[in-house]
Amino acid sequence: STILERTCCDSAGKSVPIKIGLVGLAPPQTLTWDQRLLSGKLIAEDIVLAAEREVADLKARGADLVILMSHTGLGPATVTPLMENAVIPLAKLRDVDAVIAGHTHQLFPASNVDMDADIDLLRGTIHGTPVVQPGSLGSHLGVIELELAVAEPGCWRVVNGRSQLFPAAPAHQAPKDLMRLTEPAHRATLSYIRKQIGVTHAPLHTYFALLHPSGAVQLINDAQRAFAEARLAHEMDLPLLSAAAPFKAGGRGGPGYFTDIPAGPMAIKNAADLYQYPNTLVVLKITGVQLREWLERAACAFYQIVPGQPGQKLFDHRFAAYNFDVIDGLTYQIDVTKPARYSADGEAVFETEGRIRDLAHGGLPVKPKQEFLIVTNSYRAAGGGHFSAPAAAETVFSDPSAIRDIIIRYAADQPALAPIVRKTWAFAPIGGTEVIVETGPGSLNHPATIEALGLSPIGIGDTGFMRFSMQI
Image (cartoon, rainbow, N blue to C red; front, side, top):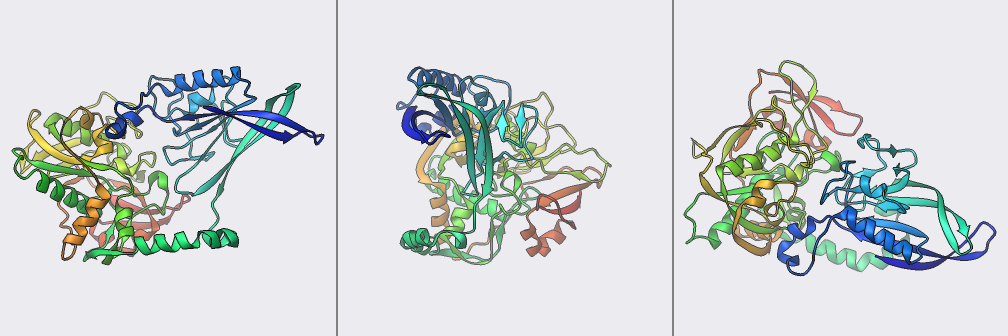
């Protein structure tokens, strides 16, 4: 935390000093996700308790305003220890005048926000405190406006506040002097990311990655497995599995947030599109029980479906697609007629039998105590995304190489990429019940897949997603 000393003008035009207190916050889970980098160097504590202490300290040091700059998103309204997404409790803290949020890539204020808490979307406040969360990847500009009054000589107080979001303008509308200043770096960046690393014979996209096994996800799993096999060639006495997810597949990212790589030359930018995050590779030893729990967390991507009732939405857009792990080397079904074991954000666990059916390896049922090796990423291995099973598993190998770089090297080593998509998972049949599937409008450029999945176009909905009907 720190205090910025500035000067502002009152309504009479008089310059008056103001002390602005800032508190930087991140989820305590960061220490777990980046354990390899941070262990022994940092201590993580409860985000709400830490904020409460720092705010009180800033006020004691004379801060007129206190603003929380928090890499945490909208989550439960009720305070629990070591929360990951704690914006709602943070906004309720005494002497907090505004909150800048992040982490979950969501927008606030936005109409799709859960209204359980004291939220005013017109003013952009939570518990009366202005809050702004401007999405991700530069999609929006967040603005907080605070109306101040002099509480006593030399001291300010907030009498009113609001927050707003503004979509980022297209690049061609940017100021010319800014474009001129950044042009050399921009050209150098484009030159780098356009370098060819290989060729793909098949298009790689994620429009239907939550409906059936995807070639894009298969490529990630193939690259991970090949890397791990080369490093563990003389140490593997257990079957080797691989877990990967479609990192861009709509949901909270919106109807344009999908990977779509056409057949043909493949560049560095395509590898970055397949794998956005700087995660590194980890191999775990895991049991059959843990594998089932891992998949149950992924299976909460879907709403519970009532058999025979038409027109039900299938995808729960509150679920982040990067948590839809597909475990290559296994076969299994997802029964969406059953209640999920986890909430969409993974923060709540329910006592249900779960959705995973017919979990098998090599055609034989996976036994609870059966052991496997599984390749995954450092984020998931640390329990990121509220995956308790990999967090509890034993780490047998880790490598500092970024998985994105592993994919680049894998693509460069192949004469051509043509992932053989294995029939890893499918929905358990529920008697031909019609469900509504929402995906990106770009999916219409893949008519063969639409036909193979038996999808019938309905049209683009109010949220911009292309809607299809499908029989399960």
